[in-house]
Length: 112
Image 1 (cartoon, one colour):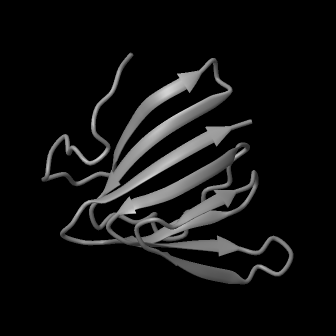
Image 2 (cartoon, rainbow, N blue to C red):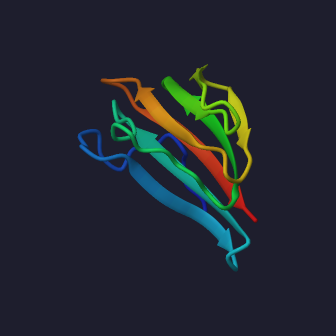
């Protein structure tokens, strides 16, 4: 058995988003903790993953954007603690912003 605390910070002063794989099962499923502090996706960059992603915002705040495949329209989704999303494969999305000056803690599950 292994455990820790999802809110424990590795460091409080970081330039890049912190990504930590908490558990994974033979390439089928991956549970990840991410800690952001003001980070966002680079201009023009979109995630376009082959797998499902379920993400929950545990602390802080963030805005994700999603691009509609048919129309190209972009929809912004603000997130606060307790909000979660299922992001199906091939859903173009990006992180527009995360809370500056405070940790934004995410829990993500990737599969299939």
